Amino acid sequence: MSCLNTKRDWLIDRIHGKSRVGSGRPPCFVCYPPPLIKCCPWLLEDNCVCKAIGWTGCVPSANEAVRDWLSLFAFLANLLALNCFIYAAMGVATSRDILKRTPWSVGIVTTKNDAIEFAQVTLRVGLRAVVLRDDATGEDRSILFDEFCDLTGRGIDNYVKPEDCDVCADASRRYMVIPLLIAVVFCVPSLVTDIMRQYSNYDINFGKCWAITTCCVSIAGAVLTYYFYYQKCLPTFLDEDVLFPDADQDDPNIPTMRTYEWTDAIGMYCIFVAIGLRSFSCIMHCVLPTPSITRDKREQDEYELIQYKKYRKEEFSGSAHDYDSQSSDSFSP
Picture 1 (tube, rainbow, N blue to C red):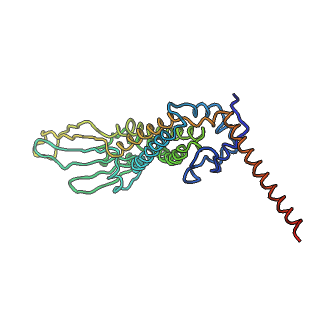
Picture 2: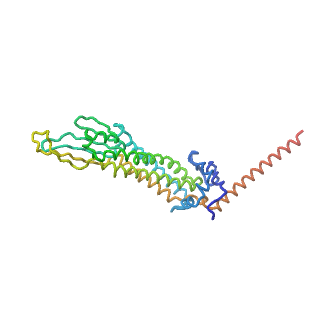
């Protein structure tokens, strides 16, 4: 069977929301197959790759109940993933109030010796900045990653390795912010595709390929953001205990210990949950094949024949109506 098919009324009708097979249609024209497919269906719908992806699956494509449930699960998973991605992306903010609620990691720095324990400093790390809270003063201070090198020797080196002061800023600009925003954006068209695929008489090969592609792009963007944050940026913060003599005490020989305790925070949890939900949605689409008419030329020809008979019937009815009108006019006094 040829990979190309020149008769595509079955596809055009779906794009226009006028499919003649099955029952029901998506609630909004936005959920119809995109009009761009009409321009190059041989590239977006009828090529061998799209047909092969559309054919794959392990559930009957004609089982409407199964299709409804799988599409619903995919929609809910993508909706929850979108919310998780948005919450994780709030770590891009540099505002103290926002970053305090959406950090990716939290570090607690404690300075103490045998005689006294000084006030703790809490670090809330995002994707572009860190918020420092000194418990002694109760003040919060937001410091951009770009400012780390400028503040070396002025206190920031108590928390960040001086030799790696530019690593977080570089990773944030190149590999952390943009991939995460792309992951968020690609969740939106997935919701539309989930609704479209719920209706077998509007499902097409392009829809399944697009659904899988958007899931993979979101997952890749999220994984890339996580990798460069967790493997490149976060290790530049000090995490090993530091022992040094405290000259401020009456006895300078009393050693002072500075300890660092790091934990994952809400931003990190959200990115993990979002990746899991997007993976689940991708699986739902993979196991649900497209209707056989999207690949079977015989079914497409039958659809064309139904359309042709309907057109001829309407043409004949119209001609008969015109003839009756002319006849009645000719016999009128």
